[in-house]
Image (cartoon, rainbow, N blue to C red; front, side):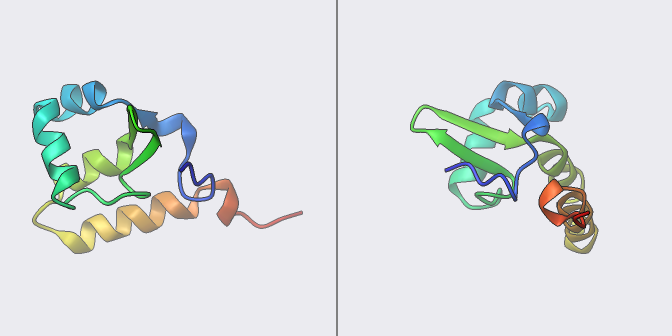
Length: 90
């Protein structure tokens, strides 16, 4: 289910794009998702049973900061703070 307050649709990409930018195979990326290394509704969302989209900036940051969870958490907070749902009204 698409959660518009969590995901910026401009950054949603298919697994092939994530494979291109990380150098990982699509199968490896899916395996990371199945194992819970990539978190649902944060790193990826399910549109329907045949379409999973990934949040490119967060997946790339996770890939680069796998050994630094503090840095990755900062990236998550920064990304989420820029979403329209986290902006002041008026």
